[in-house]
Image (cartoon, rainbow, N blue to C red; front, side, top):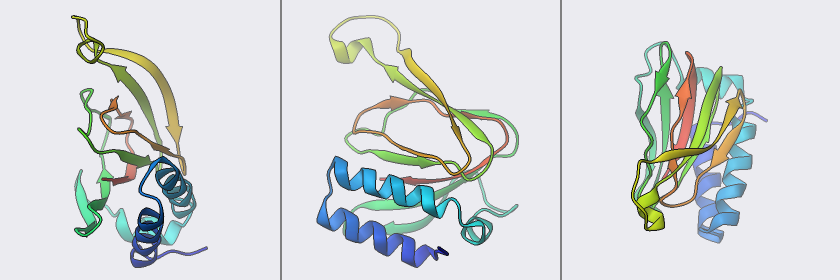
Length: 149
């Protein structure tokens, strides 16, 4: 199925209005995987001029954004969390090594943040994080549209 940004955003709104919890986010993650297969959608929103981070849709009422991230060459971010919010990452092209991180401070102990799991996220795949979960995406040259809240 072909998608427009407006159709994708409207579907996300409907899903979140019906279920703003984990099940709703999992439905959006599945929808994003379908959208990532739409080459016309990807070509429209991930061009050679797309910056590393661009908000392409913002819903102030429900408090979510759709972002496009485009990297030229390899890129890695430091482990980070999204505070009380959550994120859904989707991979349009290439591959990103995703890793979950645990913070000993959150567990009541001292020490550095450490990787607890790593996995490759390949083209047309998406993953959903939970609130306050720490992650670290690292990619070889890719154009990854990311849906995040």
